[in-house]
Image (tube, rainbow, N blue to C red; front, side):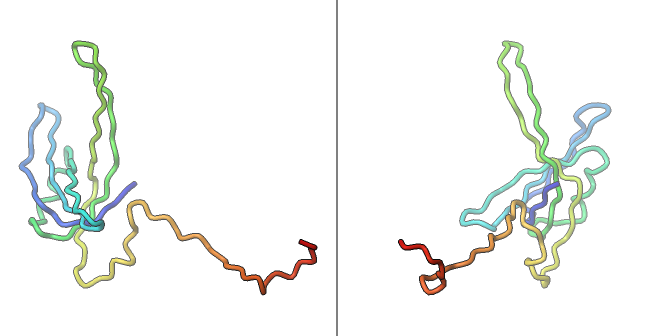
Length: 126
């Protein structure tokens, strides 16, 4: 499970792809790095309405899964496609601290202990 927080940039209308499959795309802007990233997400089936309550400019947290598939063209060429499939969207409180929000790829900082020459008390001759 992954999640990311960003500003809703655009939401597209729902598409009826086939008789039994529907999807809806939306884009958020992630401003957490030096350069803004515009990330496209997909909602499917009964999840298509999850984005209805949000307007462009809203700060949202998107929970998603990465999906990948292989496709073989009629000419025999194999290609790979990825989908970022959202399954939950929630509003981010404007006044709340972002420190409590888990980062998408956060890694705890290592415990670093520094030593000085005064700390050494071994009896080695060199």
